[in-house]
Length: 229
Image (cartoon, rainbow, N blue to C red; front, side, top):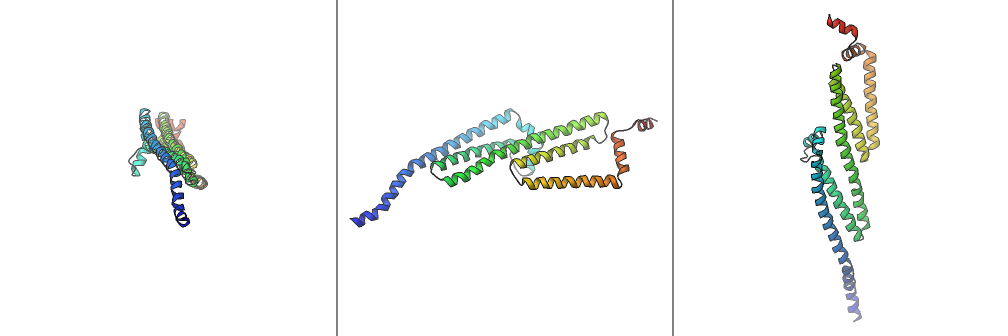
């Protein structure tokens, strides 16, 4: 009998552990099901909300949707945001479920991924509104320059637009913590190279070209009178 009891002891321990684990497993499944349903409801509500505020119009005018299509992504920027929110809710449900099962390490890993998604959402919003603002500045400078008679108003508008976009992209990359130091140093090196090239161009032989460009942009009284003659 003693030998029989010793043989049945592991079975008894396993059944006891399984009986204690079964309620936790059922609870975890209920949490996952509830999180999945909540994620689907939020995805539907957020899709309708973004359509209601014409967010797709803003991203289309900003050029982000066209950039996504060129990259082979069928959805627009609003769809990307909705998908990120959807997976954020799913990951939150997974965290709660794994925590209820006592899987601390797995919960920590899922938590790190979940905490990264809000940064990505904010970076996408920064790119969307920053791109729209850059294009707005481009059009404003171009229209104003043409009204005051600047010949290269469109070029000035594009320069302002690209300058704004560089800073917007840097802010977005810093938000998601993607090689922040390397990106900043690369931008400073590129900016220093452009400034040095411009300085050499003006200093070593660009005076006449610069004078002609300034004359085109801001004609003097003598040149206007000469054209009138």
